[in-house]
Length: 279
Picture 1 (cartoon, rainbow, N blue to C red):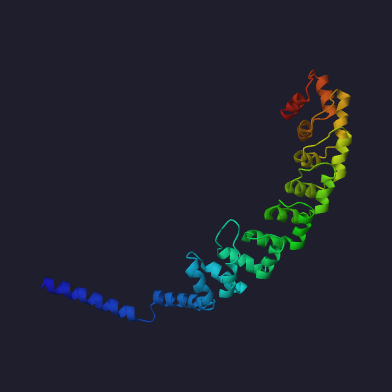
Picture 2 (picture 1 turned 45 degrees about the horizontal axis):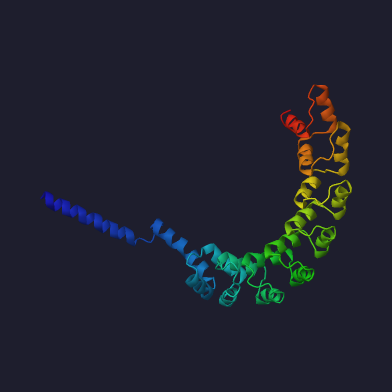
């Protein structure tokens, strides 16, 4: 009798469960169906041919990237064309590359326009940067025609972003500086450094200045007159790298006079820099 009651109880539980599962009012089931439907409709709205083609090549494509495909109107034809835009680093194009290229309206004609001036296999990220800052084949040709042929794509982007021109470069090479680097020019233009600024130091006796030191001079507002002012406290022919540290910590001729009055009589300027830094 006990065995019969147990079997009967198990049967009732199973039947109750089956009946419950058939009820359309089951909130969990209804919720799942409702949440699944919008996702299905959403994915159907994406160009399935482009999605299938891309997924076959890129296994880790995300839903967000597919949404970007739809927003940018990327299709199979565009994907195939992008495959022709191989960067010199051999990097495979990924979903983000393709979206960025499309967003900047970069097409085969844009890429081929740079091939005409000898720029081939430009990395994808540089193509996007070219378009963003306005680097054109004409801009590059201007540099090549002026004799500057060893500039890489990334340097063109930096120079164009600061409106650095071949004429600006030439204004420094005409002073005798033949080793001017693109990064020098970008920093110079950003800080408003002119050939006249460099010449003012040359006139004060600083010949063949290391151009890497010039941005620090300009950013700290160091002038030949400032350097000369230290002659009144006995310091002449101060090295440019030393005067940078002097100005950076706030050492002035007046400070040196004040410290000497307190008994700090040094014959080296750097000692006053150290004193000031711990003051």
